[in-house]
Amino acid sequence: MRGFSAGMARRLRPVLAAVLTVGAGAGVAVSPVAAVPVVQPLPGPDQIALTDARAVLLRDPDNLGALREAAVAAVRLGDPEAALTYVEEAEKHAPADPVIASVRAAILALRGEPQAALDQFAKAEANGAPVADLAADRALAYDLIGDQPSAQYYYRIAAQLLQQRDVPPNNYVADELTRRHALSLAVGGDFAAGDAVLRPLLERQDLSGWRTRAFMLAISGNEREAVALLGTVLPAELAAQISPYMRVMPRLSNAQQVAAATFGRFPRMDAIAADPQARSDRARSDRAKASRRRARRSRGE
Image (cartoon, rainbow, N blue to C red; front, side, top):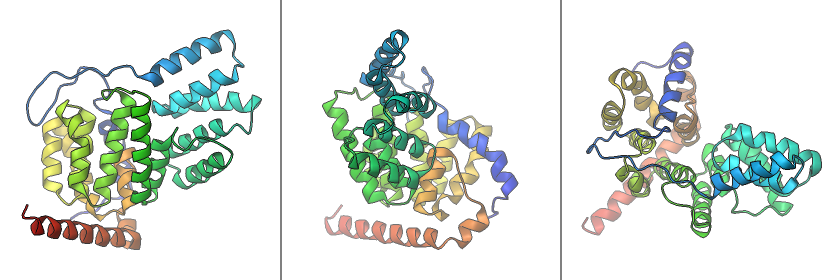
């Protein structure tokens, strides 16, 4: 298989970024199974909280409570730049506020700086920040260092919090958590569990969910099926440009796989070939898959 040059990786990165965001708009109805109407996302408590906090800040720009609520809501909604604006304003009034510190940690995770994020999360928690509030972004940080068991622990905490907060399932925050959790399970070697987690999104024809499944298939060694899926849910030219990424996914380390699927960041091919962590992660994943196959055979499945 031909490897990527640095120049090729740079040229394809914007294309991959387009795939990472496609389907974010409303009204897209693409399915490899059947064409059905897309269910429109529902506003959740975070959208409402952000709207309310902004209204307060229009009247009182220095209101610390509103700045805190806006920062938390913005980062949960996947807008780290907006969250940072509120964080910087809040820090002028309360530089040691643990909730604001945890938002800064989440911003670092969303920017692909996992170790800095985890260090910041630990400091914020030690100073009193609730563990559950931004657990999804803490999970992402663990995923980005290749610690899938810890990531999945925090994904479960995040899912419990969504239930407590009555976040509707057809909502950006809930759906993004589902996609991340499913990907993490596949990266950790359990495609079947990840596929089960992702299934509700696929049944709603969530295009970003199908994109996640393509990466999960490639990570699990089903590159041909991943490429075929992309060809079904994307325009042919775009799918052809992305296909090389699908074929290289099994060769990446766990951390690299998450970074590639989440941010479109791929290492140079010569670095992949020489990376002992990638080889170790692949061997561990292969052992996990073999163990699950043996367990299924013993149960007669």
